[in-house]
Length: 113
Ligand code: FES
Image 1 (cartoon, protein in one colour):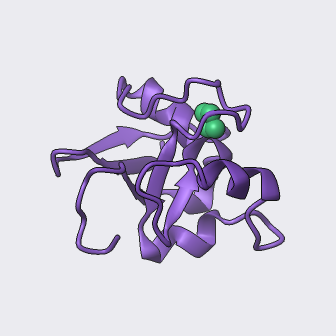
Image 2 (spheres, helix red, strand yellow):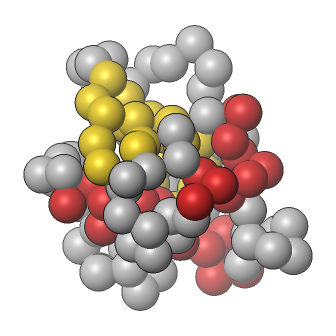
């Protein structure tokens, strides 16, 4: 089973199971981490699933064409505390090569975001 690490708002790190094919937002809920709200259910209509992706992983979670969709960019513009490494976690689908992925919640202060 692939793993993912979430850095929570209080700075704690939580490692969870990351079933392949689920989005990172769904994986958070799978691991009972509801601080990643995902109120629109992954339909790019809320930005409550905003996370920072660790720089070692950022390029690896980009879509195949290497660019974030315009819809995601538009929604990210509404996200709280937008940064260079920001993504909407409902748009990152877990695949085998993402085993070990690290994401941080907005409000956390990892030294890399
Ligand atoms: Fe709403 Fe990701 S869950 S945009």
